[in-house]
Each structure stands twice: as C-alpha cells, then as structure tokens.
Amino acid sequence: MMQKTVTIQIPFELLFDAIASLELEEKRRLWQLLDREIRPAQENHGKAFDWLHDEPDLYTLEDGKPV
Image (tube, rainbow, N blue to C red; front, side):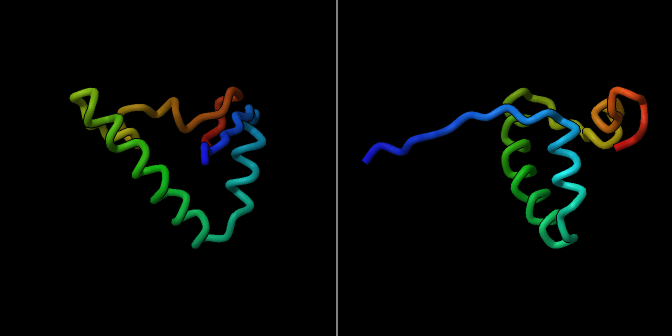
C-alpha cells in the first residue's frame, strides 16, 4: 500500500507558540527528533556547524526579540 503524505504550511509564529506550550519532556522529544533530521543534512554539506552560536539570526523573530 502506498503511503499518502500531506504538506501544510504553518506560520513560524504559530509553530513557535505551539512549541512553547509543550511540556518539558515533549520539548526534549521534539529536540531529539529535529536533531536526527538536521545532523545528516549538516554532515552532507561538509560543515557540521554549531547553529546555536554560528547562526544567531535563527533565534530571533522578525521583531528582533529572542526566541
């Protein structure tokens, strides 16, 4: 049986609000899932960067406030 997929677009602010409302353990599980997805992409680009320090703009909203 072929697996069906759905693609949706969620505004960043709504996604951030949803993540902010998670309990700590749920946030940790999400972090682990995202890490498993991000790490291979970083390694495939030949640059495993520490995006907590190298890309500070990833952690600010459009209004300049930290996420």
